[in-house]
Amino acid sequence: MIVYDDYTSSYYCMYGVDIVTGTFITMDINTRRLADTGRVDVAATVARVRSQRAFSIQMPDQYVFCHTALVEHAMREGLLPTPDDSSPGLLDGFDEGSSSGSE
Image (cartoon, rainbow, N blue to C red; front, side, top):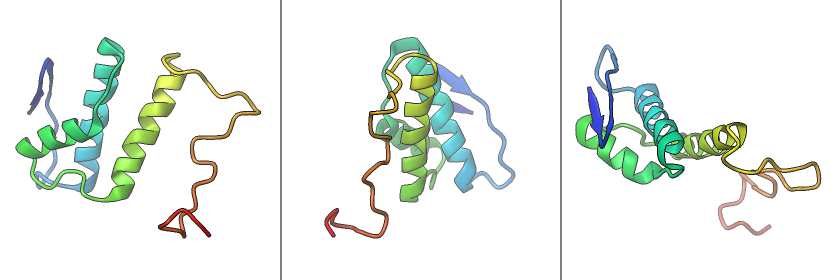
């Protein structure tokens, strides 16, 4: 069972730790919080989840997934404006091969 502020959920994972469960828990807590308060804090949620489920969310792509999915969820729920065709996408200009951001 994960307890985070007013959000309590039970999850089952055969071994207790895996890469998917921590991401799912983080998303569940933050989508509920977004609906209730209009705010999220992925880093604080991960820290709190880790205090109860060691090794949850360790890879950078898991953080990117959580942030991107939360933005998309917020847009779908009407909590963020949806970009029109002339607006750049969320990841436009992101160069996976460049660590410095310059070419």
